[in-house]
Image 1 (tube, rainbow, N blue to C red):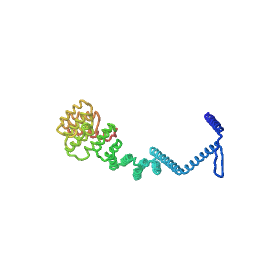
Image 2 (cartoon, one colour):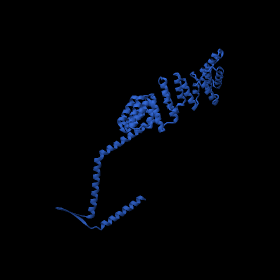
Image 3 (cartoon, rainbow, N blue to C red):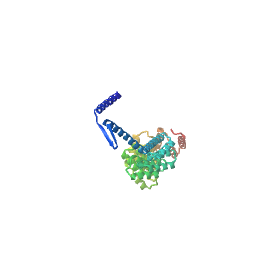
Image 4 (cartoon, rainbow, N blue to C red):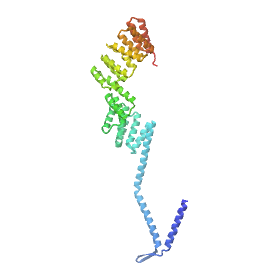
Length: 394
């Protein structure tokens, strides 16, 4: 239908042109002595149109011929860019598929083709890392830096992460500090910094980085608590303390974190080793008042001190609130031994064994029987303790 319409239009234009020309009787005279030429205006118009069309096509052909080298160069650039883009995509796919040799080859090809050398170098570096070829990884990282400055942050982050995987914590920290010096810290960089500081055992920096991550809401509270607990435990045990230094370190722990069982137990044990049992017991009491923990309750019975009667009374109040706690019963037995309350001590220790048999309870009861001259009973509990030690864990 469309073709028929065009045919009608062309026919109408031909008829109109024919009518216009039929009524034109003019002519044109060309004189170039000794020649004269006379032609009709219609013929002259047709010749002019044909000559213009020929001139137009000749000029177009000449121009196209002159521009042909540039067209060829542009075509080759497009083909090169397409090949480089395909190599980049292939390298990404191969890296995710775990085909690291292929990923490195394709990334190298992309660099040779000049396709985003910054990204290609990072892909090749990650592939070399997975192949455990650290020397070639460093070469790819350097080529990535030479190739594209726009990938500076990505290059630094990748280098730090790969160094951390190799456990080169000091170098990774240096890369991250250089990155932080040129701009604000972002969350991913903070995570890498946390790993680096943990690897370097810089526990003060670990705590500061954890606080920064908390402000960003970047870690679950449970994970942050675990990081902070490990840092505080390490700070409380990292070097020999005198009593005053240990107390200062303990006071640096935020009050909300002192009740965590691992932190309180670490501080209490350290103080017991320095002979400050009274302060150790206060730490355990404060922690247990804010949250019960069987390990802390068991630690409460260690370290002989003059406050044994006070501790015994407090532990008996706890037992009213928590009857049947095996660790608390064992602690009560130990405290009764310290106060030479032999009958109560035996009752508490036997109750602890009845609740949950344990080596410490058997040993405590065996030693009690030794002190009371009951050798057969002592030997029986020593054997029971040895049997528990040989029993495989549940």
